[in-house]
Length: 244
Image 1 (cartoon, helix red, strand yellow):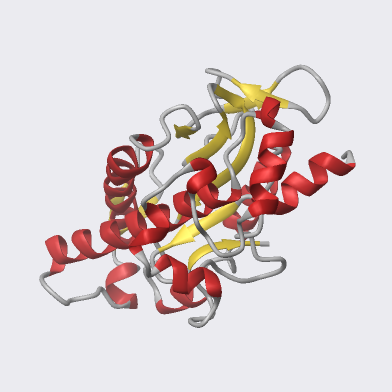
Image 2: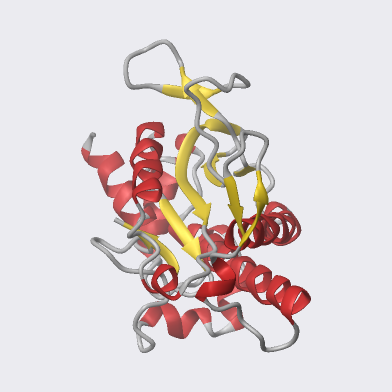
């Protein structure tokens, strides 16, 4: 990666924790103070005002405008909204299914409710996760796609493009991957900037450590093959944005 692209990647990933962590961790951080201030979200582009995304971010974006990728401030804004969509979906579905203030316990989460078409058991947590995903997607369409229509794709599918280790948009399922959410260059879904997947852990252990899951780890490992300026991340209503 050239020096200028590496510098831009660093700016774009200021909201990406290095090492295990999550968006919103550390209540006194400048980012969180700003996120609690509505003024942070009254502007976009060069006028966005996150405390750590000032002149340097704007200069890098101006110098490398041909990439047509979002600035660090806009990426952080999208991540904030994705977390809010996850929280809203989690709250509303739990309230609808169990009543106000009621949260399913581990026994309810693991309760078997049927079988899929292959005969594999379906648990209640799987069903709740599906419903929460649907609601989160609706929220993302209303709150995020509206603001960044040219830089956002919901459930894009990527597959091998014929070159070793390279992926591109595809409509073929074999060997493909379909992340929940992608930020990409303007009008170019194949030029990925950041990848995200919603996760709605139900059990106590899952909420505390949603990455401690072999299927999720494999999934995130595969998403890295798609490329981008940020490591792939999962989003949970409890911990926000989490990436390696």
